[in-house]
Amino acid sequence: MSRAVPPLKIGPHEIWPPLVLAPMSGVTNRTMRALYKPFGLGLTVTEFVSSNALQYGNRRTMEMIDQHGLEKPVSTQLWGDDPAIMARAAQVVRECGADIVDINFGCPAPKVTKTSGGSACLKDVEKCEAIMKAVVEAVDCPVTMKMRLGWNESNLVYVDVAKRAQAVGVAAITLHARTARQFYKGSADWDHIARLKASIDIPVIGNGDLNDAQLAMQRMRDSGVDALMVGRATLGNPWLISQIRDLMEGREAQPLPEAAERLRYSIVHYRAMVDEWGERRAVPQMRKHIALYIKGIHGAAVLRERIMHMDTAQEVYDVIEEAIASLQRESVAA
Ligand SMILES: Cc1cc2nc3c(=O)[nH]c(=O)nc-3n(C[C@H](O)[C@H](O)[C@H](O)COP(=O)(O)O)c2cc1C
Image (spheres, rainbow, N blue to C red):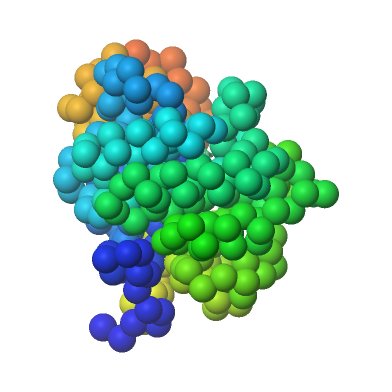
């Protein structure tokens, strides 16, 4: 294998390929991370967890930081605005198996920013520094940080926060190149990611709108980042991960699979979710995934509508099997 890019180094971890699954709250639970990892991810990150909630250790919170051990190394992401509470939370997640602790300065959701957490921290760069310093001092593993460009267009603080991060011992930084006020509107501006890479010495992970393998590699080359993070575009399409890995490993990217294979894999994903979380919790969670697996398939709108109203896994398996059979009949007839 002739690698087209070097591995990502975070503390003692040499991460290959330098491709990270974006943390996505309500989506990237341990089942999904373990399923998607073999497609070619070097690193996975848990859904963010509230540092305050971790003090109480309720079951739902602990589930969010849980892992199978199948996805080593794994990074656990914390959010909060109090340095001492963040430091204690970091110790808890470290004890629960985190190889890396990641600090969230990126979440724009009002339920998080109204308590001054996530991207709201970027309004106060000194507080960001205090949080990072407290967390770095609290744990014996690498600490990383994920942020947006700033709270809004007129406060692009990412270089300032990154330099403070580097100074207090943060081991790597992910930048999602939008402001918090942009939420997901507009496009991620990779020129800012290139600027960040040129401003600091610790590894930078570039994130935002990577929905094509060639484009992803182009972004990596142009910005000079040490790794890429992929999120939404992998949902229902984990083969994008394999395509990027192929290019990172110096091979041509394998073509994306046919519709029938995508549908078959959606059942594998569904069954894994039912096995681990039980049908009552898996069925509603899988609706959004199935909608993405079937995207672009002939008759997807009707299929999606039917699946949205189904309450049992078996009903879903039956209609997907039916759709696979129909695709096979079409391909024989063609
Ligand atoms: C449903 C959803 C949940 C998210 N939850 C988190 C989270 O818990 N922590 C975090 O740092 N970012 C979170 N993000 C942001 C992603 O990690 C990523 O930065 C963003 O989606 C841009 O990358 P993409 O264009 O590849 O999706 C979330 C995004 C989505 C769509």
